[in-house]
Image (tube, rainbow, N blue to C red; front, top):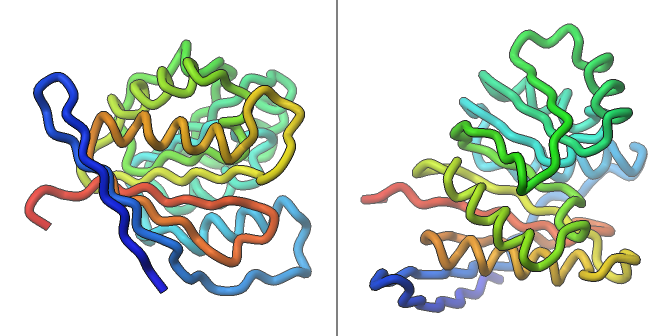
Length: 204
């Protein structure tokens, strides 16, 4: 079953529309993989396109998901705060000519590039409410019509100031105040709260 919730925002003399569409049914996951592989499979299974021009993965860690995402795009950028994780990701992805990896802190050093897919997997709960709103502005600057944002967070206690669910809601509402979004929350994502955010193409 799919339900629709719409909210209008009047900000800076602009009328912004926030559309929440969900939940959306998704296929079952195989439980024979590791937790990391199962998470990667969940994300890949729910992408809306077979191929992307430019992908940014925030919190790429050691590159488990990165290795799969880069195979579906022309240009991939993985960013993470951990230098150790980035070095391991570089080793894993050394054979990939379309991959860039950077140790950066977001939103303070957001990359200046456009992307038609941005993946935020288990990263938002590490940020403050202000940083989440700043990140929304940074990501908005990278989006183009037809872009897609994946948000994956763990429910429950994360031992951080904000839970994953709280952080996701702050980020999503901040981004929705800047542009029209179609937002899908997926069912059957064991252990995660999984959203797909779509930037509609004008006229479609």
